[in-house]
Length: 568
Image (cartoon, rainbow, N blue to C red; front, side, top):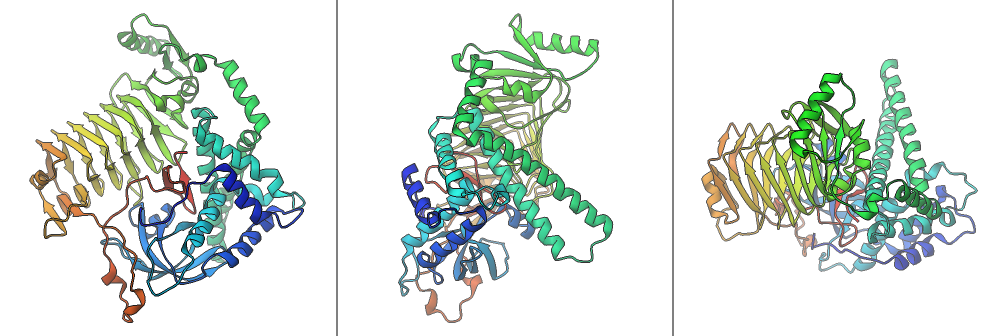
């Protein structure tokens, strides 16, 4: 997203900006915070005439049945300052994507482009800065439950500095990585639960003829969402308060000092319940792997993860094991089943990223049941999967199996992956190796970008709705926009090596090599009175790289109404 304006501001800069906007009253209740933003934006933000990139949120992508992430070039026709929304007209879309011409979208989803219509005078830097401030505020600072506070409470004095400090403490390493991961999950889930709740309320208000049984189901769902939001608020407020946060972290250190000392690797065994003979059989299997090493038993996978350190190994029995995050094991370590991959299943209660990996992580003999938005995110280090099955729900157009970021490596041996929109995504600077693997029942099996090192051997891509392999490239030396065909087409891509690869029953072909172009702002927008959106579509780039961010050096995945934070 180098065509948009981004910012990287310090704690003091953010604090000064927000204080200037919200300091007009002795007491500013949470219900009036939005009004103060409206007043500020009305005198600072360009009300019409600028182009922007609209990063379509995941929920909208699902409703439109288009891939996620998707970005489009838009023209802002009007800004509703009271609602913090804008009416936009789509100027350029991605290949094979059909969208309505006009939309009303939250301002925080818009990123002004550096280039604009040359005949229009705009204070573009101020507009971009205002949207950056607004976006940051409603993602990190203002929480969905704040509107439920007492109207006599002064919101800025209660929350502004503590939440801003919490964000920067998460970012600069002051808070342990396990707690940071927990906080990120809470933030993401809070926004998502609030968005779902608002969606249900709006839908019920627009449907006055609901059957009593259907209405009861929606009411029950609203109650469940409200209860979960209360639980998230309780956890978050403990960590928001600096005194309570420090006390909690010290208590955790006392209860588990080994996390500080970083001693030798430990082996953790998870056996939730079973007969005596099953316990004995499980221990016999474990003994083949650890010999006479000291082991520790845990009743649940989640509890074992909470007590693990980087580079530990967790052995799981035959069962379905639930967890929230990998905690320290995301920095390195192993999770292993001891039987066939169908016998041991792991699943998460986290709807964002199931396995967030920053180090060398090994997964063996497992079924990874992905109900979250992304199954595995490989940020850095090497993720090795041996004899594993990764499966999605097969329903959403935004579901992604494995994403490998720059610097990350993915090695898959004897694995199969299915039921995603995109099974595997390899960003520029990443590395992917598939050996004796099967990819099937997805829209796109493997999507890679320039300078992604790929080696596929003795593997198959079959029953992919679109393509088995899609290569997005900036190399436009050839006269064609794209090339489609069998796996022999990949010979022109030096970073992609295949051997004994089979493709069968793939809807549009085994391979697509697509020339990657960017959504370019239009410099002479008003010179063509017969403006035709379809003729301005210059991009097929799905912007799959997750390095586009609110902060210049962070990684994001969009949420239903805002932007989800997956890295500080």
